[in-house]
Length: 61
Image (cartoon, rainbow, N blue to C red):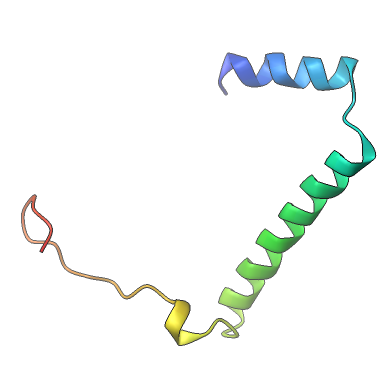
């Protein structure tokens, strides 16, 4: 873990974020979990899926 994260956690412990910032973080985490669930349960649309490509050598084609 980067030492800056420890500094950030200490600052959050001393000065907790406001309720709006907490709700924002909870909303972002919920959106990420929803997207992950949709991808695992085959509800993710085909147009939003990346197709694997083959790379020969260093250059991309």
